[in-house]
Length: 343
Ligand SMILES: *Cc1c(COP(=O)(O)O)cnc(C)c1O
Image 1: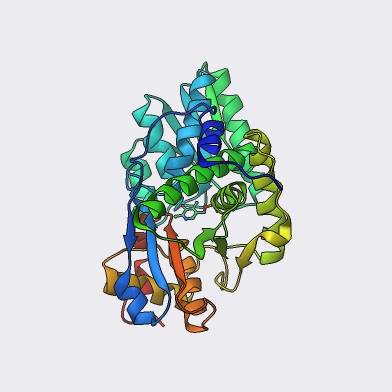
Image 2 (image 1 turned 45 degrees about the horizontal axis):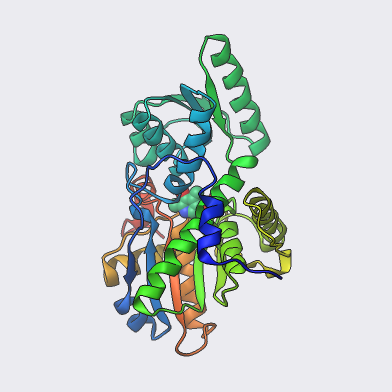
C-alpha cells in the first residue's frame, strides 16, 4: 500500500476548515521514575491534557475542526451532550465562549449533591444545562436534535456536535495531526517508539493515531486500552472511523479491523467505574512523576500500560509513548474512591 510523506499528509489536513484553540505542540515528557519503578520500557508522555482550553484534554484538538464547521454554518449556538462529568462538554462550552457562541449541554442524569468536576466548570462557563434521564446514545441523539429544533424555532442558528456520527471522523483527523506533531518531536530527540498507548472511548483518538502511522508507513504500533466497550466491538468501529477519515482526507489507506490493537480488560465493571488497577495507576503517576491522571480514561489506559509492563508484554529495551488525553476534573467528582476507607 502507498504511504505519504509528512508534508503531504499535513497538507491534506490543512485543507480542512479550522480555528486555532489549542496550545500546540503539547509537550512530550520523559517519565523516567515511572520506567524505573516498573523496571520496564522507556516511557514518555504526550501531554494532551495540556491543550489549554479550560483545563484541556483531547477534545480541544478536535474542537479546532468542529468549531470551524460551526462557524462555516454561521452558528451562534452549539448544542452537544453526554454524561454529567463529560470532558467533551466542558471543552465545548469553553471553545464556544472563546468564539462568542452560546452553549447548550444535554446531560444524562440528575445533578445531586455538591457541584463538582466538569459539571462545576460547565456552570462557571455559563453553559445552558438540560438534564435528561439516563438512556442510550440513540436517546441522547434524539434529545440533541429536538433541542436544535426548539432553538431554531426561537431564532437561533444552532450547530449540533453529536459526537457519534460524522463528528468522530473530525476527531480522528485531529489525532492524525497529533501523530504528525509527535513524529516531529520524536525526530528532534532521536526517539523511535515501539508503541503509542491511548485510551479508547468512542475511538476517534485511537482511529486518528492508527491512521496516522499507517499513512506514514511507520512501524510504531498504536495500542488502545478500552474504557468502556469490548475489543470485538472496538476493532471494526475504530477501523471504520479511520477509513472514513482517510476518505475525508483523500488518503490511499485502508485499515482492517484486525490491525486495530486493543485490550479491553481495563474496562472493569464499566464506563466511569474505576478499577483497582486504575486507582493504583492514578496514585502511581502522581507519586512517581507528579502527573495527574483521571479515573475514567487516562487512569484506565495507564493501568493497561502498567499491567502489560509487569507481564513483560513489551520487549526489552522498548520505548513507549503514552497519550495523556486529559480528564483531570473528573478526579474531583470521584474523590470517594481515593479516601483511605474506600474498599
Ligand atoms: C473523550 C475522552 C477520551 C476518549 O477519546 P475517544 O476519541 O472518544 O476515544 C479519552 N480521554 C479523555 C480524557 C476524554 O475526555
